[in-house]
Length: 178
Image (cartoon, rainbow, N blue to C red; front, side):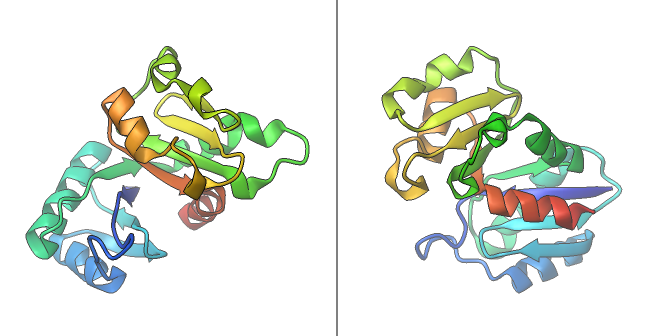
């Protein structure tokens, strides 16, 4: 079964540096097959007999700690999850939307619809966010680097693990799943 592991917080500003080739070698030695990485920010496709995304993520997290000494949160998603990003992203329905301002926060667990209240999104206007299961669709007004509606805020307010990808990356990852 093919899984996509999204690693949070690696190779950012010189922290938790992991070369993708070394990660690939480590995961192959662990028993994963067809390991493919995409860009340095920690997007890794693996194949395994393990069906549980949680089990796959736990194994990857353990191996990263054992080999590289980094405590790295891992969220594992399937092809269906990515397809739902395209089907359910409300911002794609807006006329002339700038996809460079669209992001998806992948969350470690299913969120209730009331979780949007806990995020206190109104504090971040004109940035917008919509919760959809284990995803938060985000549309930044200026850009991801200039907002306080970031992964740290999401994790703190909702008590979850989150990792954010821009829309171009989400699009490419779905292509790579094919």
